[in-house]
Length: 113
Image (cartoon, rainbow, N blue to C red; front, side, top):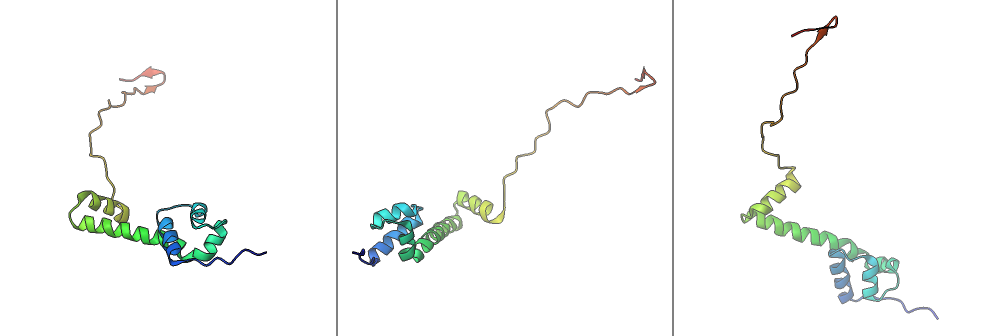
């Protein structure tokens, strides 16, 4: 007797998209939905799995951008480092090391001052 055909509900679609958004593994999502195989999960929920992470990244980036625009200096610094290639450089400090030793050249085995 064949297994009954799987028909995903809207509630399952929302749950799969939400779980994919936060990085839950396909095996774990399949178990939660009641599917035996991640392959079957991908067959029935391909768009939810693909869009979940993209939507989550978009929402976080949008919130970060809004915080940066509102004056959050840490958010501004992170945005510029991540998106504009900014980086922190150490402050210049003069070398505290001793100069190299004085080297005396020798000509014909005689030491020159």
